[in-house]
Length: 210
Image (cartoon, rainbow, N blue to C red; front, side, top):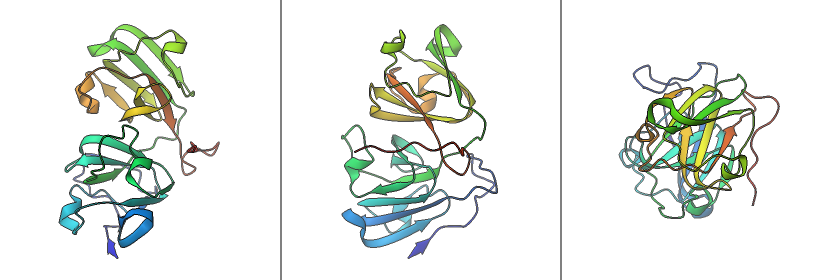
């Protein structure tokens, strides 16, 4: 098996607590068949590791975020602890089966808190969410246009459509003044949820449903 470096490199722009454990297994074919690559840190180009295609994934310790293209670009795929036997189990948009780079997600142990803004630079109507998952922004009286975001607690993942469907966007601690900063082409988010992991949030973690 190919093995990644055990610890994060300081030169990475993504910073993680030194005590946090990450581990993910990438398989060449569906249903965990073929060659396997073990990673403990980010990989910006899976082709350089000899993998032209990823058919299935098993997350042992996470969470992680995968990307459609090299160097953490393109469509995002949120990967929490569990098994993903084929590409459409990690892609909510069902548009792309390409998976070319991956990194751990930075986790913060404090309570989750996020503020969504209608306009860029934290202007216009806003919606503050504290320690709650929102399957539909419309049902809470907020529009689908989200042009900037401020995360002051925890890690979140937003979705293009209600019910946690469509393109996924990961929001770690910090400001996002423009939707381009989270990799979106349009300021559209219609559902949002917390990313929880037993290593940081002992009250439980998000459970994937069939």
